[in-house]
Length: 461
Image (tube, rainbow, N blue to C red):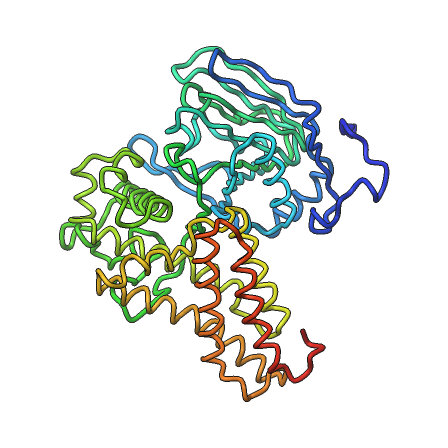
C-alpha cells in the first residue's frame, strides 16, 4: 500500500523547482503535523510526519551520488565494522544535491539553529542498524536540537534514558522528521535496531551545528574523509596517509620514535586535531588555548602532550589538515575546469558556502595566514605552498581553456590565477569584517569580468 502524504501535491505548481535544484520534492515549511513528546522537564522528541514529499527521488540521487563508506569504530577491546554505510558533509553546501541546502535553511529557520553539517546513514536492509548511543558532539552540549530526516523504508526509532529503562518508540516513514531537543542528547540514548522483519533501504539525514554550544557563532567546516597517500609532496609536515594521524610523517611529531599509533591512539589524535581546527577557525589561533582543546575533546594533559609536545606542533598539524581539506574541495571544483561557465560555478559555490555564515570567519587558510605569517616560519612556508597549489588548480584550468581556443593566449594563466586568488582572499577578509557576503561577491565578479575580456568568443561566458 502506498502511504499518503499529509499535504497532497496537486501538480507542477506545488514544487518549487528553483529552490530544490529541479528535484520534484516539497516540504511542509509550517511543520503542521509536528507532535512533541515531552520525555521529562528538559528533554523532548518531536515527530513531524510527512514533512518531505517525494523522498524517493532524493533517496535515489543520494544513494548514487554521495560519498558512502563503511566505517569501523572502537568497541571495548576491538575494532568493529559498523552495520550501515555513512557519508559525512561538514559543509552542507558541498553535499551532492542542492535540495539539501533548501532543507537545511528551512530547519535552521524553524528550530533557530545554524545547521551547517550533514551526517547520512544508509541502512541497506533489516540487517543493518545502530545500537544505543548519543550523537557527538551534541552530547557534550547542555542542550541541542538535532533533526533526523528519514528517506525510504519504514523503521523504528527508539529513545530511552541514558542509564537504561523503558524506551519510547517512533515509527519513522519515508519523509518523516524526528527531532531530538533539549537535554535529549545528554540525558538519553537512541537507536535504530536491527529487525527480523524484512525491510528495504532507508537513509537517515542528521543535521547539526558545527561546534559546541560554548561557541555560539558556529562556523562552516570542511570534509575530513580519508585521502590518498602523498596528497601533497615536498614538505615532510604534509605527507598524508589518509587520516589526520598520518599528516605529520609516519612517526607523528610528539610520538615516541618508531612507535606507531594504535587505532585508538590515532582516533584520539584525529579528534584533537579536528577540534583544534574548529576552535582556531572560530576563536583564532592565538586565542585558542590547549585547555580549550582539552575541554572540547575530553582529553587529559598526558593524552594531549603524548601527541603534541607543544602548541606549535598542534598548529602545524591543523595547517596540514586544513590544507588537505581545502585542496581536496578545490580539486573537485577545479580539477576539470575548462570553461568560463565552470569558473562561474566555482565562484557561486564559494559564495554559497560563505553566505551560510554571513561571511563570518573568513577562509580557513587565509585566517591562519594573517595570524601566523610573521610569527612562525614553518607555518608561513606551509601556508604559502598551499596557496600556490590552489592557484595552480586555477592556472591549469585557464590553460585548458587556452588549449580549447576559448581563452586568448595573451592571458597569462599564472598571473590571472594570482589575481583570482587575491579576489578570493580579499573577499573573504572584507566579508568577515562586514559579516556580509556582498564584498566577496563584488571582488570575485570584478576579477571574472577582467578575465572575461580575454575570451575569444564572448558568447562562451
